[in-house]
Image (cartoon, rainbow, N blue to C red; front, side):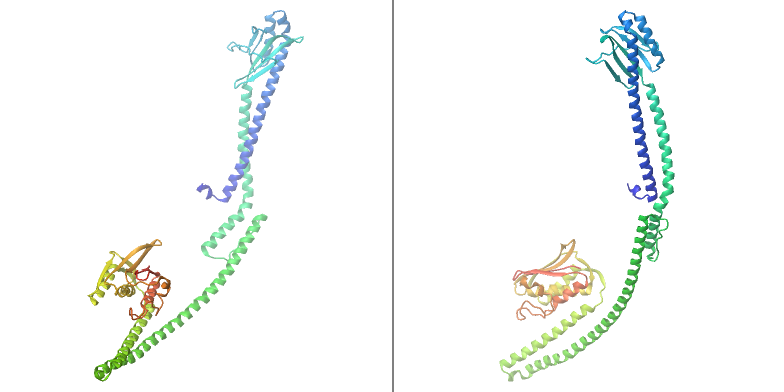
Length: 482
């Protein structure tokens, strides 16, 4: 089937023309031969019936006067019919009265019985035709005559006709081949030309070429014109696309230059603001501390409390500035992907947290063999925020558990950090990753609300996604993909 599909249209049309012609001629020859054979058999039976009638008429006297010799002489007239193998006359009681055979080796057949009420009957076999007829004289049956004829003439006719049919079929197929070769170029030429032009256009992307319709039929001319019109439309659209592409590239270059300049200015502004803000904050914190140390005895408890609040606010402001700068750095930092041992990284972060607060009882369960294709520096920042959050929000529990692992997700893998801490209200899960968004009071759990926003930006830069599941006092699980 695959080989048939790969043949050219010229070859297919030629084969189809010859196949249709061959089938039509074959059916015609078979029909003619079948009709001739049927006609021959009908005529043969009619001829044998006539011969039997003549022999019966001539043998009436011999039967009436019981003269077998005369009946045999009547049968000998069948020698003029070479196809007759044997014949005979018998009485009504079935006794053979006289017989004839074409040669001495031919066995005289036993006369068949006539069906009741029938004056004549015949049977046609593969090698002979038998006919039996009643001999009637003055409307009274006097005997039976039978004749057997061979079918050699029929077989010879069949062989001749088959030979003639083969010759005619071959000659007709050759004529059909020559005839189709004369006209197939007119039909297939434009189509083959279209195929060649389509191949050139596909290979060279040259839409300026056109097909010619000279010598085409009405249908192929329409096809050629439609193909040329399609090429013209594609050529026009290609020009428009090239123009739009050039304009878009220029716009991208301009926009990139503008963004680069804006980012540079923003970076300068960020560092300038952070420096300008840090200096007064350090002064506020420093002078507040000095005031407490130097003038503490002169202040009442309310004054001391005010100074402590000033220091806490300045320190929180300083931390907020640091977090904002880190968030900006995460966005601008150049990524360098490599294979990161996530298990080792998580264990290192867990060890650092345990050293900072050695009195806490936190069980870490970190899966072995966790690796990721990521920027090691950015991934470390993300894991520090996620594990740090798990550490922070389990601080109210005497015994806590933090788990780091991997699960199947949409045909790939998703990493997770799970804790059994304070959790969150699932109704506000969309607010978790917004900058400065907090679901717990600062007095309950410290923080600036920047950590999860930083995590989301890092994961998005890796082409992944991050989401969370949890409940109030049921812990939280943060998933992310890379």
